[in-house]
Image (cartoon, rainbow, N blue to C red; front, side, top):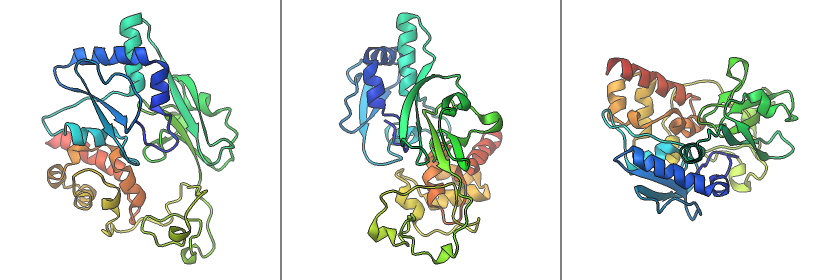
Length: 295
């Protein structure tokens, strides 16, 4: 399953090549003595749940219900000396084709989408070696648009030397640059603006055609624990205390609070709702690198 905004539907892609997917699961089951979990969305019609050595598990709810970190946390949590491996559904299909047919499938289905496009989103089958330009060159977009390899939550800006599709990315996102200043914006009633805290009029009116931008709507400031992180964190951890320890670089406390279970994408929503405008993904990576060197 994939709960990233405008991501391709795994059910459609898998069912197009269901036999190769099942063959890939059989290969994975032979490669380990442990469990192989097949994580799907609720009520999803995906083959492979009856393969020997494979356990089918379903998850429901909005993002981040589809993240591999969420699945690992509830099914087989990792620790300092406990490792697990994960693999994407399109790689499983490629495994099946390689071991059964002897063919190396280098193609993947990638979604291209964003509010700046005339068509909200569409999918293309491309080579895994494709660069961003080959994916988005036919997209007619305004000048003030950022092209992101991956999701708007956890992808990276595809420009310069980074004009390529990330290894685990199944989508290219386009989002308007937030470089326009709104006159007296801090006094706005916010009928067309979004706030997790519900401080705008849109909380009562609703947002039907909300078009997000890259703007953080403010400058960096101190971390303010107002309960925002708890509203978007499904894992059984204390996010406010963990994030605070990551900011100050206290790796001992961070390890005790569960940072070893996390990847950058697991904290993407915490970044989105943060009143202090912190980028918790890079902060987490710096701490994990420090743990690797010192712990």
